[in-house]
Length: 314
Image (cartoon, rainbow, N blue to C red):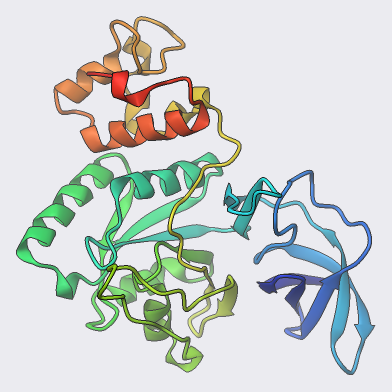
């Protein structure tokens, strides 16, 4: 039988068939995972094949995972494995950003964007809680919107509570499988409740002590929404370690770098300490954002520790 994984809770998976029936499934024996070493060999969004174990109790056993068209993956916090897959077979990723409570750094934003771009996942940046911004935060967000729209990313300012731009989000999501991602407390579950109140997903407040959100979503889960969309609500992420990306390819996922690569003195220029680097020249001229370049250096450092970022100067 064929189905899609709607929820993953450790060793148990909720699978929905094409006839809309739900089965609680487990993994037994050998099955195909296409050589991905992960803490979760089966992820939400996977198309799977399974045997029905008990018709009345609606239980089954997954024996094969069909090849994924894409996935969002990060380094695992579990040292016994190499990676953790957030979700698979995604049409659109919505990255939630807030200037405070909790703060979303540009480094975090850019790490997510590199990951999604490497798997050709369309990513839209949602600047949430716009009704709560201070004047200083409004100016900061405007500067970020300018940076990211100039390099091709759609940016939308939203408020779940004030219903700002929710119709626009719904139009984008229709007939697609999307994922909400970002830190805990940025409003992913709150927006989902606003889009489909019948879901009544648990939400939490941001801690006054550390200004960070509390984990209310502990497992990724897919939902069918009333307006013909599928959405994957993922747990909040504190940090995002990139997986299986070499330092030589990082520059390919910064679209603004590609405009100037061919003008570098060396064809294999990594835009670090090389002479006559056109990318670094255009940072000085303001055509490339310094925050984006700092993110690039941070990512290169994490892929290869031989580069000392403090020694790299414009």
